[in-house]
Length: 186
Image (cartoon, rainbow, N blue to C red; front, side, top):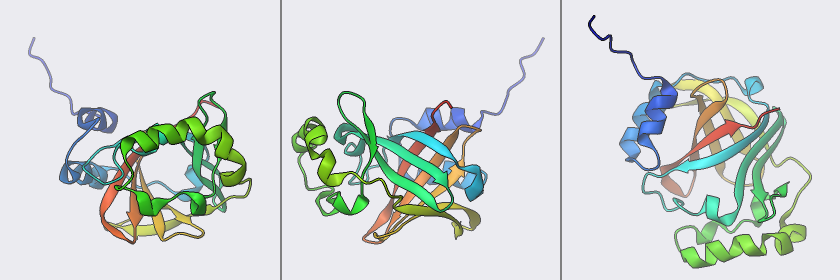
């Protein structure tokens, strides 16, 4: 009996690109993915990057970045971090030194995770610092997270029922930064 060839799922295509690919490959997958509505994104998501040569590649996860939490379309915690002991808490994005991206040595980033528990009182927030809106990005209207105080918009496409592919649109950097969010079990 002849073998039938199946088309890979979006999740399989994404897995084939991980951990690193070109920006063009990431954009090709992103553009093929369906839109997601803002109200469909609720819950806590664990994140990881899709490395494409961006200056932020390799910085978020070692720093203790955990992911994002979407309580409602108007209440989003855009940055969740995890201490070395596993405590997850929301961080005020204004207190993250984005100006050091690509300039800070990896060893400093690694040490920042160890200091995270001590820094927690200074960087923690209990207030949402972003919201979700439908925006047109690359010709598709889809959910986007708009930061309250920073020139950043994270735009999402659906990979599957529990996974999103996000692209950070940062005003000061024309190259997109890609990340993957997987919904935590309820």
